[in-house]
Image (cartoon, rainbow, N blue to C red; front, side, top):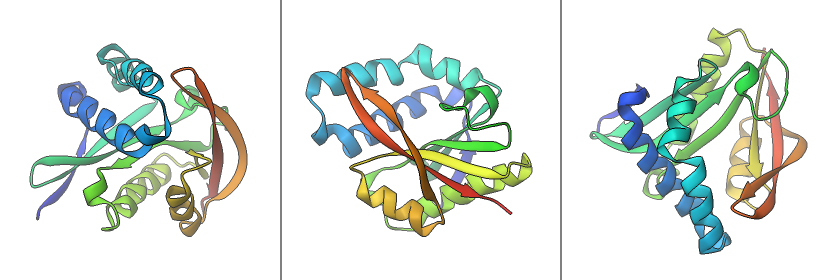
Length: 172
């Protein structure tokens, strides 16, 4: 199986929108009401919202494909695109998602390595991200990669305010 990483551009918007909606639903759909989930998906992954994010010079998207099918994606933010003010030397991993069938195959680590490579390329000294307080698998993954909790913030799904734990890793 041929796995490729593609820098995502506006031309990839339909694929990005599909993978975003599918992976968020698979990961969080069962823990949210249908109304809250639909409201979140319609806002966060709308054509206008994703177009705006793709056009932001402080954000980078990458699609991960296997045999030409999109199986995951990564979104990185610097500067003013970060969802929290973590400073100019920080790179945020805002989204790192894989389809369920492709988890536990080392592909998450591959996406993380892309984030790490970008942090080094951009001369950042800290990686950080938010992870839902009830997503224990993701928390364990990030802890194994050397992240530790540094705070928390509210992440609203529809009308439901939820807590994301903020994790950070200092880079050498």
